[in-house]
Structures are given as structure tokens and as C-alpha cells.
Image 1 (tube, helix red, strand yellow):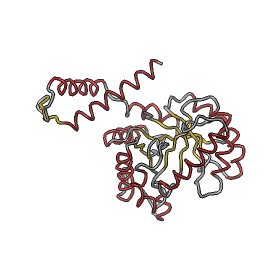
Image 2: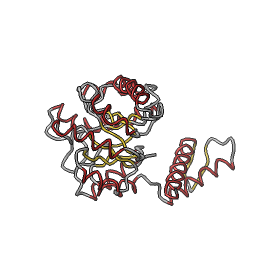
Image 3: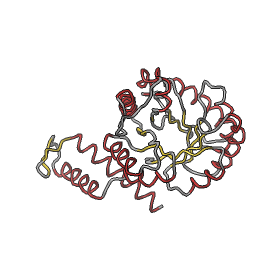
Image 4: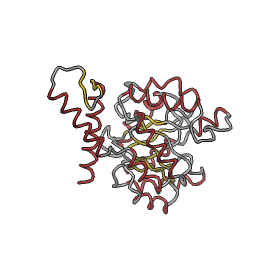
Length: 291
């Protein structure tokens, strides 16, 4: 499970090297919004060099309908990125189109078949909001779903996407919720979007805790300083793990029970499902740290 994806511009050697020590679970080398068209050829070279031989490094290509995506993929796929972040996806058809191209490129560049995953950004175009359900069963490469507010607000001609307290305005809260529901329906992780004010540590912490509370499993980051806060928010606390273990033990000791009492609260099967998820996540994180 990936808690933090750190974006880094593909045309900056300094930022790429800095990202290596940031502690994020995954790095996204960006060839889209943070790289100008003039810088893109060099960025592709740097991205390929940076990704080669590393684990958990992803590539954000340009949109599949932009004319740039194929050049991005051809330049970088020899380095075998862990996955492709697909921006401005219109529907799962774009993910399927990308999956077909990855089949070809993995074979051409001797990359293990089917190993390059896809993470669509599912809400950057207004039409995409009406097709999020299409990701259900769309491609085995689907690694999760995430969403974006900046391109969406630009497409709407909106003057803001947050209120004066930093909360999402209703159109963007809807997009966020639809992404969460679609990811659950597709049985893949939901990744919350970026918190753009990287100097606001308190606001980031609140944003990340809310995301974890709501069911997102991770979050996008735009600055190395955000990584530790995000990782902390999506790591189960010791108290949460202990309570989860008690719930699992309670149902184990009472086979066939539909609902049981724990600390004055009625616990039923949905609580058991969540408890098992919490334990599984804590176990994976512990194994990663020990490894």
C-alpha cells in the first residue's frame, strides 16, 4: 500500500535527487504540467536515467490524446517504471488504450509483461465525472484512482475551488467523493489529491487525517516537506492496531455471531472488515521497515 506519492519535475536533476531522500513510498517523475514543451525532450532523458534500477518510481505522462504521450512512453519505458500516472483521463477507455500500448512496449523493451501499473487522475475533465464507474473491471493494470481539482476548476472557469477556511467547495467535494466511490467499486486504492500550500503544515495534517478517515489509502504530495506528515496520517496508530486486533479476536472467539459488544459499542461485520484492513496495513508497513 502506497501512502505517499511525491511529484517531482522531470526536468530538474536537483529536485530528482532531493526526492530520493524524502521518504515517500513512491515518486512520480512528471513530464506533464511541471515541464514546458521545450524542456520535455531533456526531461524524458533525465526521467529514464532516474527511474532505471529503482523501485516504486512512477511516470506521469501527457494525456493520451495530446500527441506527447507516445513519445513519453517510448523514451522512458526501457527503464521499467513501476507505473504510469495518466492525467486528464476521460474514462477507462483512456486507461485501456494506455494498457494496450504498455503491452507492446513491455514486449519491445524486455520489461516483464503486465508489471507496469496505471493510476488515472479521474476528474480533471468535466466529462470524466460521468464515467468513473467505467473503471470497474477495466484493466488488470489499474493500481488505483486519484483525482485533481486544479484542472477541473480551470475547465469550469471557477474563481476558486476552496472556501476561506481551506475546505473544498461543493463541486470539488463531489468530485472527491465520486473518486472514492469509484475506487471502492473497482476494488483499488483511492489516492487523495495534492495539498497545494506546502508551507501550511497544520493544514496538510488536517487534510491528510481527513482523507485517511474517509477511506483514502494515500495522498499525492508536491513537496518533500509534506511526505512525513502524509505518511504519518496514513499509518495506523498503535491504539488503532490494538483495537483492530481485539475486534478480530472477538469474532474469532464467537464464531457465527453477527454483532458483538466491545467497550460499550456494538461491533458487526463491517467493523471486522475494517479491522482486518488495519492489521494488514500495519503488517505491510512493519515488514517494509524491517526489510
